Amino acid sequence: MNTQKNEIIAGIDLGGTKILTVIAGTYCNLLAQADMLTHSEQGYEGVISRIIESIDAALGHVNEQRASLKLLAICTPGPEIDTKKGIVHFSNNLQWRDVYLKEILEEKLKIPVVVENDANAAALGECLFGAGRSLSNMVYVTVSTGIGCGIIMDRKIYHGVSDSAGELGHTIIYPDGPRCSCGNNGCLEAVASGAAIAREAKRLAHDGQADVILAAANNELEDIDAGIVAAAAMSGDNTAMEIFDNAGKALGIGLANLVNLINPSVVVLGGGVMKSKDLIWTSMKREFERRVIKRSGQHVKIVSAELGSMSGAMGMIAIANTELKGDICG
Ligand SMILES: [Zn+2]
Image 1: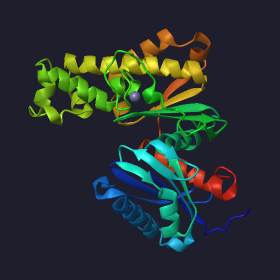
Image 2: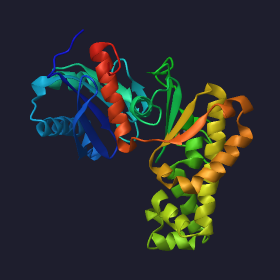
Image 3: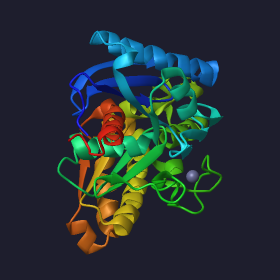
Image 4: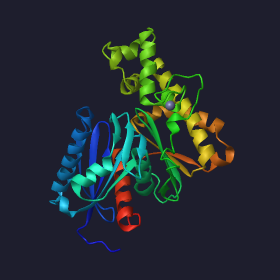
């Protein structure tokens, strides 16, 4: 099907903190973007109003109206999303339960809406436009407050039977390890995420074993976050360095499990914690190389994400385009 020159599509990355909206032409050519705070504490109706405001703001940058918009593709944090029906059954970042996102947005905007999991969207974005360009099979892992993962096979997202594939963050690294938000013990997310790094630092500070980190948080235990621990590690604090070292080790085990299972050509690492990758990389690589199956290890590259905060929204542009034309960005 041919598309008209003035047809435009929107891709949105709806995060717990920020709504990033991108407007593109139907060849995935980027035209405009806008971001806005999510304010999830206002409830889903407030967030949906802000989504529409952010679309209008982005359209305003290119002097376009909502009437020109042919399709909207939006990704949201999980873990429980029905992508076919566009229902967010559960999202702890947004504090949503059973929000019929597709139905509500289609009613308000009068255009088709596609919903996807944010890690899957970021994986597709990196595969098509970022660190995975020209690859058909790759895995994207985001190490942030939590740990997410998207699996791309033959340039398509692998969803699994109930949209739950790629929950690398909830694969178990240490069965007797700390409790995870999912109810299990020792999940990768419970030992290597930004939240896990902060929790370990707080535990040590509480026991009087992390004075430098505590001082960096102005002696406010609850203010310790992964960024503060990273800054302390960069300044040479041994306790902070060891916390990152242990997170890197757990991540290396998780990545070896992932590569042994999927045999991808590339693993792309993104997310806020990877901004401090120098603190994690050595122990991660050492542990990965110790545990990966030799043949898989020889054929995989572990690289950093290239699109930063744009990966999810760009993935959604590709999905919107595929939905509209049956072809990725062609
Ligand atoms: Zn878990």
